[in-house]
Structure formats: structure tokens, C-alpha cells
Image (tube, rainbow, N blue to C red):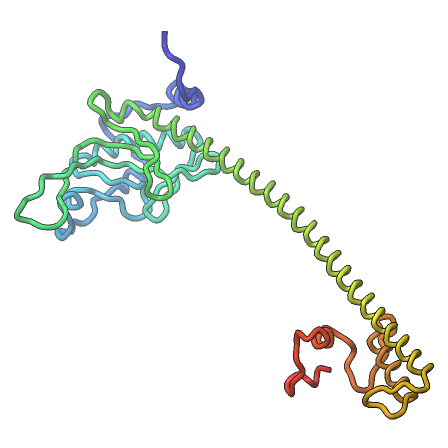
Length: 303
């Protein structure tokens, strides 16, 4: 009895490709009407200054499929890639080549892929310095790449099977991962939309609180100013009623009372009388009265 798969949705996607009778997943032994991207898989000019692995490896150039294979594996790579591209397009998917990278467009998601030949390090000559050279293994892989460099998954040659036999699994798996990434992106976007909504509600509430508090603070300041203005008026009334009262700086009580009442009206927020000496009462005056600011020759003009 077969064990149930740990990834039934993945296996269902693979099976959908492998059993699609409209597809030709069999890799031929000879190219027939090759795809333009396969025709453009040309040799890159040799650079003798590069390491041995790079001298032997053919790397794509221009706007063609992203591949890196050895000269001996080039024809086989073309056959595999030609079959792969034709099946992918038959499935209604689009291949995009940009900046040396290849992307498979699945459910609006760009899945980065490449065809790659595995290499092995050579034993380093003890008389030489630097990095060890590598040799190509002849083993070919399709790779699903994330963030431009991290290989999330790869399918290729093993000791018991060849890449040619796995194209249905490769394509089905890529379709599955594309749809999965699309669903995850939509979920993330929905999460951020909900988060922004909550943040907007909080910001709106905070703005209301800020406005309410500012208004209360203004009300409190104005009530205190009114109370102090009333205290000035009450004090002046008491002075006027006392024939023996003396106010420092004034010889004439009546003149002092008139001056004080005018200043009380200037200070009183319910009157806001114009004063010949002072500007309209504001934050600067408040700060001076609370001794948070000292009057000097630079700011006295603000009084």
C-alpha cells in the first residue's frame, strides 16, 4: 500500500502535467524546429585568464535563457531546453529573459529558473596558490532560484535517472510553487492592508485625542487667564476702595487703576483688548510669565 504524499497539492500539480495528453514531454535525439531561445544558445568567447571551470563552461549572453553548461553538454542541454520551453508555452505560461536571468510567469508571479551543469572541485596542486579549479560533471539541473541567488529547489541527473525523464515533475513543481507564491503574496498584501486599516483607525483616534487635549489645554489656559484677569480687577477695586492704599510705581491711584484695568482687558481671553504697548497676548507672553523665557534685547520686541 502506497503511503500518502506529504505534499498532495504538489503531487497533483505534477500529475496534471505528466498526464496532459496535449503535451510532448519526450526529449528527442535531434532538434526539430528549435525554439528561438534555443537557437540563441551560443558559445561565449573564451577568456584564458578565467579558471578552468569558466573556460570550459558556456554561459548565456544577451536576452536568452539563463544557462551555464559545458561544451560537451551543450547539445543535450539544447534538446532538454527546447522540449521544456515548448511544453511550458503549451501550458499557457510565459518565459521572460531579463538582464541575464530567466523568469517563468505563473499566476502573475515571476519564478526565476536556470539550466545548470554541476561541477566538482579538482585536487589543488600544492605548488600553486589561490582557488582550486573545478571540472564539469556532465550532470544537468533545472534550478528554481529565490532572491536572485538562493536555490530553493533543483531537479536533475542522478545515478538512477536523467533530467530528460523529469520534465513533467519540473514543470508541475514550478507551476505549484508559482501558484503558492502568488497565494502567499496575496495573503501578505491582505495582511498589510488590514494592518494599514488598523493603523489608520489608531491614527484617527489619536488625532482626535490630540485635538481634544489641545482644545482642553487651550480652555484651561484661557480659564486661568480669565481667573487672573478677574483677580486683577478685584484687586484694583479693593485698592480704589481704600483711600490709604499705595501701589509701588504709581503716585496716582486713579491713574494706576485705569492702567491696570486696561492690562486686565488685554490679558482676559474673553475681551482681548488692544494694548498700545504690547502685542496681542500669545505663547511668548505666557512663556515669559511662567519664567521659561527671559526678556533680553533680542526678544523684547515680541512683547
